[in-house]
Image (cartoon, rainbow, N blue to C red):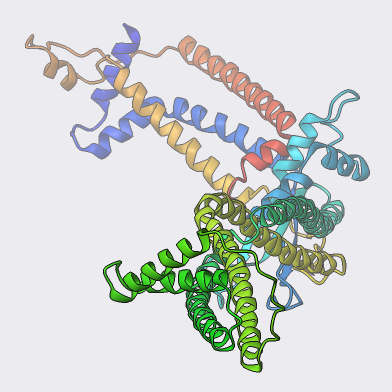
Length: 529
C-alpha cells in the first residue's frame, strides 16, 4: 500500500501531461535500475567471452591446374571425369581419418581434443578448419575451373602455414597417383577385354572355317557363281546334244555310203545289208511316220531279206573274201572316226550331267546353309569389329599411361605457397562487441517495456480517475522518515554489492568458458571470406 501511495505521490509531483516522452521518462525513472542491470549483465558476459576468445590465423595456398602438355589430337587422355568431381574424390582421400591423424600427430595439433584412445574430435575439428574453394578464369567459358585455393585455420600462424603447404602437396601427389592409377587400370581393363575378344575371335574363325569346309560351294556368296556355272553347263549340254545328233546323222550317212560302196564292190553280205536297212529305217522313223513311202519300201526289203536269210541254203564252198576297195576303206575310216567322236560326246554328256547335278544340288542347298552361315558370320563380324576397336583403344590407353607416368598429363602446381599470417582472421572482435552492445541495449529496453506492460498498479491520480467512476477525495503524499532513508541506503548498498559480485562471477565464468575455445571462436566467425 505504501508503494502504491509512493508511486501515486511521485506521479502527483510529476508534471501533468500525457505526451509519449513524459511517459517514457516516467517509466525510466521507475525501471532504470532494472534496465541497467539487464543491460550490464549480458554485456559483461559478452565482453568477457569476446576478449577471452583465442586468435585464429588462416593461411591459403593457391594451386593452379595445368592442362595436358601433349595435344589431345596425338594422345587421348584416359582420365575424362570432370575436374570438380576428381577434386571432390581427392578431397575425400586427403580428409580421411588416417591421413588427418598423421598430420595431427606430425604437427601436434589439437592437443586438448586428443585422448590416448580416440582422436575423433580432433579429426572432425581439422576437417572443419580445412576449406577448398574453386576458382574460374573469367576469360574462359563459365564454369571452367583453372585453380583452387586451399585454406587452413589454426592458432599458431607458423604451424598453420606448414599444414596448408603440406595439404597442397598432398593434393598434387594424390592427383598424380590417381591419374596414373586410372590410366593403368584403364589399360589393364582393355588388355583383359582384348584378350577375351581375341579368344572369341579365334573360336569363331575356327567355326566359320569349319562351316566353309562343310558347305563348300554352297555358301550364300557363291550362289551367283553357281547359277552362272549351271547356265554354262546347260549350254554345254545343249551343244553336246546337237553334236551327238550331228554325229549320228553323219554316221548313218557314212553307213549308207559304206553299204553302197560294198554293193558296188560285191562285198556286202545279207547281214550287212540287213543292218544297213535297219539303220536307214531308224533314221527315217525319227523324221517321218510309218506311212512314208521310203519307210514302207525299206520294211518290205527287210521282210524279204529276213525270209531269204531264214531259208536254208545249199552248202557251197566258201568264197575267199575280196579285199576292200579304197572307197570302202575310206568310208570305214570316216565311220570309225564318227563312232569315236560319238562315244566321246556321250562321255562328255555324262560328265556335264554329273556337273549339272552337283551345281543344282549346291543351288538347292544354299538356302539351307544361308541362315546358319549368316548367324555365324554376323557374330564373327561383330567380334572382329569389337576386337579392332579394343585394339585401337588399348594402344591409345598405353600411350596415355606412358604420358601419365612421364607426368605430361593434367597436373596441379602450387602457384602461391601459404605464408604465416600476422593478422588473425577470427574472431572479429570489433563486430562482435558492436553486436553485443546492441543486443544488450535491446534486451534492457525490452525488459523495461515488458515490466511496464505487466505492471497493474496506479502511478498517478489521473490513472486512478481514468480507471474508476468513484470520485477521488484526497491524495496523501509519501512520508519518508530518517529510518526509512537509512534502510533504503543499506538496501541499495547490499544490492550494489550483490550485483557487482554477480557481474564478477559472470565475467569470470564466461572468460573461463571462452578462453582457448577455438570451436566457439569459429562458431562466432562463420562468415569468413
